Length: 338
Image (tube, rainbow, N blue to C red):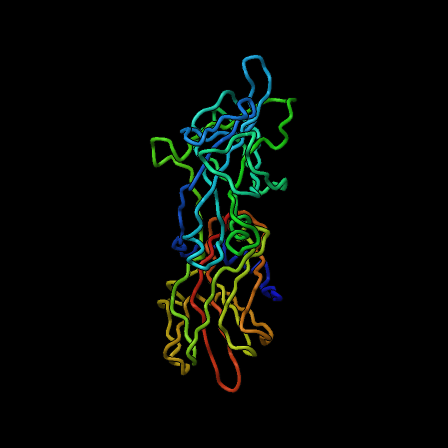
């Protein structure tokens, strides 16, 4: 389906989301691994599935010979699948507990292509993985221990939509060449004794609030449909269950609680729609051509300025049709990240 781009001046939008605004209430799932295990090229037949450490990257033995560890991680996605929503972002967090030297090197994260088992996977039997790098992080620095993060949004969306089966991911040295320095990452697995330091997947969603309304039985529902909520990127806002042929309008605001000195939501009963509310402050609006299908996908370009990071963009969609039909979506808060 085509995705119209919001006809909003970037300067106006930059001013909007860069100003003082209400904060979105996070709608987040936190998942711990179903399975995790590292493998070791210097011990290719050994399984480390019960090890309290999850490690990856290039290392060297006492003689200076390079060897490689790969960390495999798998999550049960029953929770995200049951929601039936598109995540705003998904981030894998791993706690680096120790290191061997100062300075960090990148490791790369890849989609795993076949099933594997925590209790049996070894370097010799590990499943193949996609050579395309899905995410990177710099690890191994003894002066920078603690949480490290990998953006796995695209991987999770592919798994949830069935583009690819979920066999988890593997983290490894991107080159596995004997030349150059080694900075392996040593961290906690799900078997470590401190539950607060277990690796986890954080799945964030748009903040849905307010009541949608319609003059018919069904109501339009607004949510994140794709894209990225980051400076210089575009986030896709999708409204489903709308009337084909109606004309859409998009409202963008800095608040979900106040507008023009009054409180939100604001009833539209004065206009003849007593069950409909304005859920966000109408600071910037845009109209679009009539819809050819019962879904409205809107790609909203965000200004490429760092000042908008951490701000929340609030949105609502309205639909007007002939002869006299009107419906409004719920409100949606989108937290902008880097």
